[in-house]
Amino acid sequence: MNLHEYQGKQILSSYGVRVQKGHVANTADEAVEAAKKLTEETGTGWHVIKAQIHAGGRGKGGGVKLAKNLDQVKEISGQIIGMDLITPQTPPTGKRVHKVLVAEDVYYPGDSEISEFYMSVLLNRGTGRNMIMYSTEGGMDIEEVAEKTPHLIFTEEIDPAVGLQGFQARKIAFNLGLSGKAFKEMVKFVAALYDAYVGSDASMFEINPVLKASDDQIIAVDAKVTLDDNALYRHADYAEMRDVTEI
Ligand code: ADP
Ligand code: MG
Image (cartoon, rainbow, N blue to C red; front, side, top):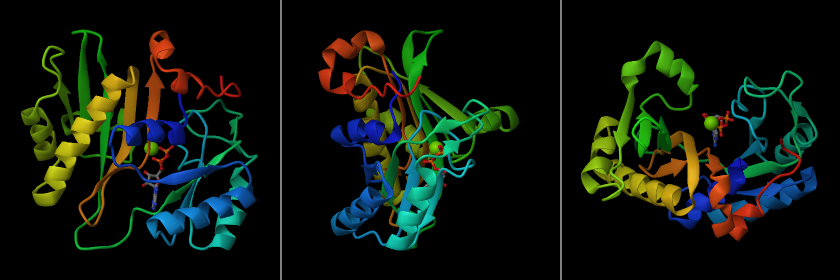
């Protein structure tokens, strides 16, 4: 079962994975209320309006936009809700947008440079083991990275008998070029992400981008989560997340 970004982030957050926070809205007026609430909770001045459809590449298709004030939140949400969003991953006629996620701006300026990484957790069918795939080339289409610069994609396989080990999480943080606080935050992020994957009986997590913010926080900015249908009986709350308007 595929989830929307906002639902995937709810699951991640419940396992202690830091996510770009947000509230979902069905109308432009609800989006304004969501933005006000988010500013109270996080202090964010700007808001990112993100179309919730079961397809990636939304940014390219005009489904992810930055709003710098509440008038823009209303205007942009009004444009996105109800549109047929066309991305490289939708059918040619697009997918109708019913909801937007009003999210905090996590690309704020600060002491260190911002970077975007790619990270996914999935089953290696060849070995029957879970693996973490990651890359320094975040925010881009991973198929393109795999084609043009395959040496920039790393994998770490997890022994199911012992789970993800500390040295593996540290290796990932190291290969991503991190040090200091960002390194420590990435180690925590990877451990929580793997916990979430196993605990939710997921079959795929794809976090693209994972952001290293300018204050060295590590944040899941996007979340593509697929749950194992055969395990949903164990998660009544997740089963309710099914969106019957999506096929
Ligand atoms: P998709 O993968 O469907 O295009 P994402 O959630 O990954 O959707 O967003 C697309 C891009 O929008 C991201 O790669 C990121 O660079 C950019 N983006 C997301 N949030 C912000 C933000 N707060 N400020 C600036 N850019 C953002
Ligand atoms: Mg993305």
